[in-house]
Length: 355
Image 1 (cartoon, rainbow, N blue to C red):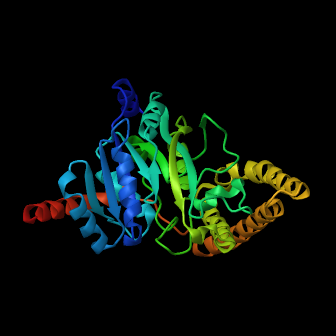
Image 2: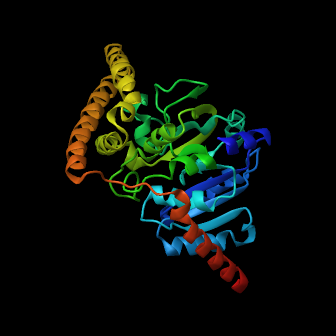
Image 3: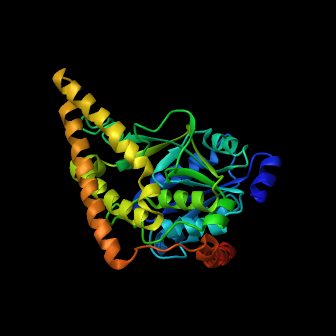
């Protein structure tokens, strides 16, 4: 913890921002995400764009940011395809004392990094997350979509306490960590979490945060709801079919996490969520239905369906994990990304010389 203490005494930490990208279909979203980082009231030390096995996108981004290479660097994912390895590549290449993560289809409010930095005044703080608001493609929340399940679309859900509060885990699309956190606990686990457009798995940040708590028992993890980003929700994710698929996938992911860190820690927050937050949501939905308010019955039904789908995924995932003996691996983040960082830097230098 000495490095963290020294950093705290030296003033607010430098923050590197990592944005993992994988498809040209999100080109305008990527540019908007980078622009929101460059417009911060507290400037980022750098922005790292980590491209997930898409050479055409990487080359296009190198050309786009060739005039601002000191502020925006483009790297190739050094590990297996997927979000976890991409983040590990960014961690290895980052120069800041703190590494922040922003989704490629999100934009950060102007004071996002300022609130992250303030959280690290306490040297025990190893991670700070923020508030992620949904930006619905249709312009409004579907009547049937319960706020308690906003995590389905990568956003902060009803049930997380307001203010700056201590939590078990931060949410990966709007989060930051001290570099020393990765030194102590390793990087994000591969074999869990997102892989482009395949089954929408998750929980990689949950697993990392639990592992971090075991490695550093005195570590404090915070969420500060003043550190706000707005996350796009495409029309395909406003449909009930996606909702059902995502909740089922969450159950699969939770089973892997529970097998890795134990059901006690792996399901600690989920027990409160399912025993208190969700029943209250069902009651609100039924009350709204009785009062004739739009979507009340649909929200109550969606909560019940989401719980059932997640439970089914958990049971199946537990059986699979027991048979296979695991399902993901953890490596030091630096080992995962250092080679790609150097390779990408050399490539950018060559391309800059020929431009």
